[in-house]
Length: 292
Image 1: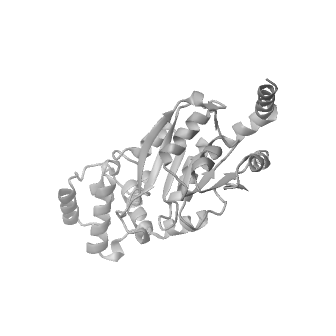
Image 2: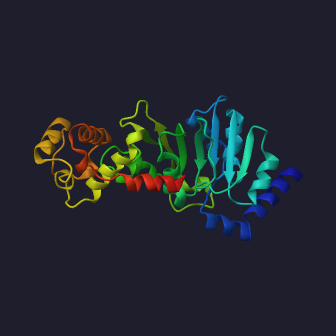
Image 3: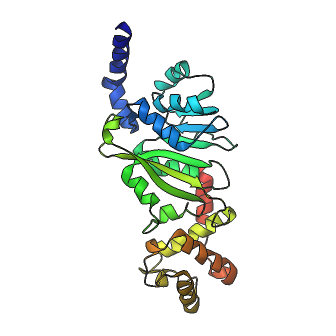
């Protein structure tokens, strides 16, 4: 009875007053049940040979489940309140690092990311992890807003942002988690979003900046269809051939083409179009360097 009372007192201290306000400011919602954390870890498929990086370890609910099955775990947490507590509670195969998930140095060896991230940080974290497909991770398992996971998982219509990663990663949505599974309770349900590395990729990773420049021209160029936005790159004859060979209409919105259709357009551009007509890739190369 005394142990149960002690746990209740600790929980009350953790979530009272200043701590509750701090978690809201950081935008993180903790998992309430070990059972759910265990299901997330099981879906990730990590085992004793794997190195796992967890971004935003918080109170360690997910970290403890990862430690049970993974060979090594690197738990990253920015809140100085939680770091010493994590270090005092977790087994020896877990290394706790205090730092910002967007800035902390990531391992150079292969690793998998399994994390319950702050919802407002989902996009910058995805950029950090997926922009350079020549580096790890091999797989990313993030608890995110349900609508975000579903948006990335659909093949069409899709977004320019999803397409910038899709030649190298496949996206899927799995394991819907209701809002009441978290504390503090978020306003929306969550979902486990999976980004798994393709093998082989649809586009050589060394061409990632040029591929993204093609997408930018298609989504942001003048016009409302691929037949218009891609006209600065391809001739009318080439566009008609591409549309026929890849089963799309030149009146289609760029968002309706699948990643495989975009990969086909890209390979045609590289092989058949003069380089002085290619879109500039410098912007994406600079952006990736800044995020490292």
